Amino acid sequence: MSESFQPPRRETFRELLYLFTFIRPYRARFFTAFVASLISMSFGTLFPWLLGHLVDSAIPSPHLSEVPTWNPGINVIALCLLGTLVIQSILTFFSSFNFNRVGETAVVDIRRKLYATLVALPMRFFGERRVGELTSRLSNDLTQLQDMFTFVVPQIIRQAMLFSCGLVAITVTSWRLSLVMVLSLPPVVLATVWFGRKVRQRSREAQDRLAQAATILDETLQNIASVKAFANEGYEVRRYSTSILDYLGVVLPTARLRAGLIAFVIVGIFGSITLVMWFGARLMQAGIMSHGELTRFTLYTILIGGSVASTADIFSSLNKTLGASQRVRELLREAPESGDPETGERTASKISLAGDVRFEGVDFRYPSRTDVPVLRGLTLAAAPGEKVALVGPSGAGKSTIVSLLLRFYEPDAGTILLDGKPATSYDLAGVRGAMAIVPQEVMLFGGSIRENIAYGRPGASEDEIRTAARRANCHEFIERFPEGYDTVVGDRGVKLSGGQRQRIAIARALLKDPAILILDEATSSLDSESELLIQQALDTLLEGRTSFIIAHRLATVRQVDRIYVIEDGHATESGTHEELMERPGGTYRRLSELQFSV
Image (tube, rainbow, N blue to C red; front, top):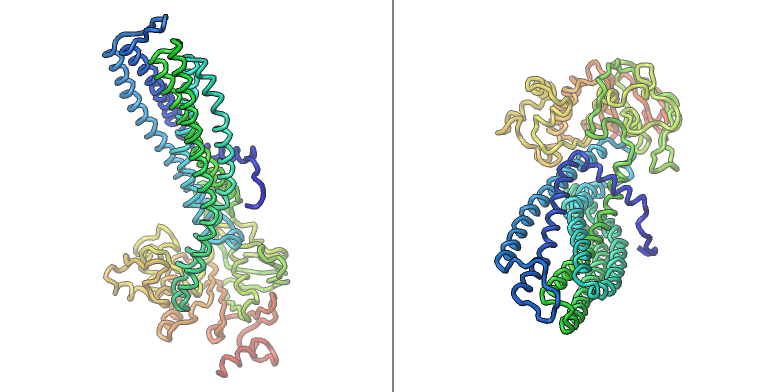
């Protein structure tokens, strides 16, 4: 980042505190772990004090005029030391386990809420984001938050306790040595803060670069067939290498800063210890300190030094967490399209539509391309049960009409009516529940065939699933698989042919039993046998439903009730196949003559 570092703003810490609201359901366990950690560290600070008394009991100082007020003997002190260690270890185990349990559970809650938020976001959000970036947020950033709950917070508690108790203990032991030590600490603390700020400055940039690399990786693996078909493995390797080297270019300077901090802390801490030991030795020579007091002071100084040294890693981890929390908070703040933001569930009941659809003067521009009008004053209609085809050149707006019908987007102007009412007057889940789509490129989920068909209506019975498969002409090929309906289709359905995937998509739509059906080039790019089977399945699917059929192959739309020719974002022609063929100079007639003359 070229700009100078800006200290963390108050809003940033508010965002971090917001994440702690996920601990609220487990606050009793968290508080118990917190108290156990404090008690454990209290026993830990007793260790130097007892060890000092053990040294004084073994080596009494002849120069001191004061006799130690507590001197029960070497054996008793040794037993007390052993007892404090046992108690401390038990409490440390209890607090560490419970901190981890609370942290892991809280992060699982965040993952669930973030995932539910993502799947409930509108399509315009996904049009402006890359999948790799979002998966990085669900993995890298949440892993950073997990470290905060399970490592950073417990470490802050432990080190703060050690530092404060140690500071009190050294002051009581010797105010002279304490003054020497305290004067040597500011340079170390200031250097820690300065280096930590620099680390935070680069951490967010490093996370951005890593997200970019993850995006390239995700895109390459999703389109691996295209990569291999075009022999672009080398190109993708170079693209990923460039991105990951950019990440390395940010990480290495950060590593240099952290290494410099560690080196400085080593010099600062051990230099301070050397100074303190030298001054303590002078006090012993003067008869002001005993051997045990110097031992006690030295151990407390080491504890304080260790807590100061650990602040480098703690501060660095905290700064990384602040960057990650900002991104997670940004996603959680996105307004969901609909549904419960906690679970993603849509609560509306299924609505009943007759299937009357009207577009009246609809204008639309994609949010990411507001300078390019896609639909301009579009008007078209489909009566209940009517089969309507949308034809026209690529980029004319046919797929956009489908997206508006499914309410992936809302029109900029004009109205979409369903059964005579504005589409926005219906619940969004209810509208989509009354529709089904069979796309050109069917992307199945990686589970079984049964699960993919049942996706049309989760909870459908086995008989309903098999009936839908039979009506879609896919029951026969499914039964030929050794596992039948339990056959795993693989990632995006790669284990099935294009025709098989298409028929499963039709079975899914049949199971849903929609009032309005959308077919997007459902028989394109298939062999003759597959096309015949799919056309038969489509004939079954189209019965009694309002249907919108996007087609480039005009032979597939000759029998529909009405054809709309879409050009430059509006309907320029409409009618049956015969009516449009009678129009001299018409676009539909020209396209038909071009296709059928080949």
